Image 1 (tube, rainbow, N blue to C red):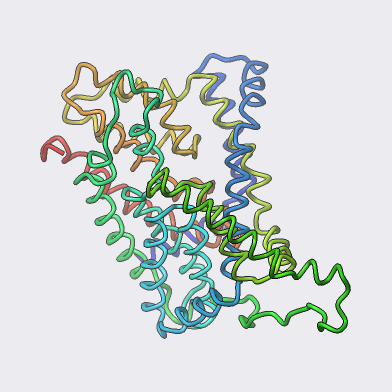
Image 2: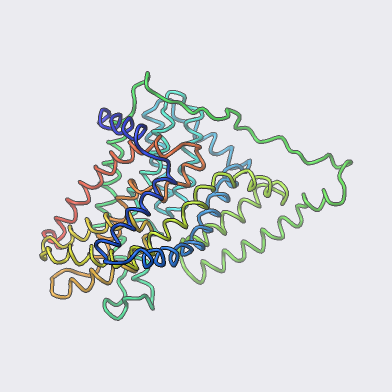
Amino acid sequence: MRALSRSLNLLVEKYLPNAFLFALILTIVTLILGMTLGSQSLPEMAEHWYGGFWGFLEFGMQMVVVLVTGYALAKAPPVNRLLTRLAGIPKTQLAALIMTMLVSAAFGIISWGLGFVGGTLVAIEIARRVKVADFRLLVAASYTAVIATQPVSLALTAPLLVNTPGHSLEAEIGLIPVTETLYSPTMISAAVFGFIGVLVAFILMAPKSKDVVPFSGPNDTQEAVSSTPASGDQTVSDRINNSRIINYLIVILGLIGIITYFVAQGFNFELNIINFIFLIVGIALHGSPAKYAKCITDGIPAASGIVLQFPFYAGIIGMMGGAGLIVLIGEWFASISTDATFPLFAYISAMIVNIFVPSAGGQWQVQGPVLIEAIGTMNVSAATVVNAVSVGDMTTNLLQPFFVLAALGLSGLGLKDIWGYCMTAMVVLMVIGSAIFLLVPVLGW
């Protein structure tokens, strides 16, 4: 396993472009597929591309906010001390790896947004202190742990969508409770065996001491010295900027909003409420508006990849949908499927589509209707389709750099640094996922 990961790392270091070029190359590939398989003209594909290009503005802003507010929360003095204490526990690379993956997985089960940001920050703090641990390995392991446990994440998109009144397929499949999706034997097995599988894989991939690349960023993790002028030197504007009264009035208002949300919505951790919690708790822990604003400004550069690349992926989705490529893929797999093989082929088709449509919600809205229509003459439940699409989407997130941009922005690493590890882990998840969905009809799940 170590030899495989090293070979992949050497391969991607030599041939893999950066994450932005990956998006551009994927755009060109989609253009060619649309013109050949989709029988679209170049002007039509350009129209589809532009039509979808701005489709991720809301989601992109949500991701930027989750990244910078998560960064600011981690840099708040009390949280920084907690992370420092937590990161000081492991002393070996093995212990550092296991703790990083366990903490990241726990965050990811609550929400993938929390997992990607919180897990990466934990990996950074652990790597900062455990010099015998490979920094690239820990960041890749953190991201992979979140991916592997997504089948039971409280924020998994497709299962939540089909359990929401008024969803686009309610007339065909009704409402599917989470007991048949998130908490079904299929999804629990995928999460448990998937996490164990990638944990073992990363243990086996861990480089030997002579090959370790330790954390190379700043070593100072102590709280920054306050730049607030002494009370006698403060101007009126300084007092306003650092006003605790204004700070905590906003915090109180925010806490009321959070409580009201959970009373009305229940335990529903979607992106907006996570961002709002990060924002309010961060403001509270920094103690003044000026300190919090300064920390947010420091975190903004880490979000540059998201701002630049998300529109291109939205454009790719526009081309995939406009040219009918997603429908073609779904129909082809459905045409060669039987009752026994349909769950497996649905899983495989979802993995392929996710490379071009790295948005679980967007993928389900386009691919879901095709697969649901296909099971009309089969003895396959709609919940099985939802589960297969969800796990397939999750698996190739280790190949598609869309969601790893947050981790790369925070860690300062490039895609080349972690892609070999992620690709090896993806192979492990593919084997486990394929076995599970091949057994679903046999086990009656």
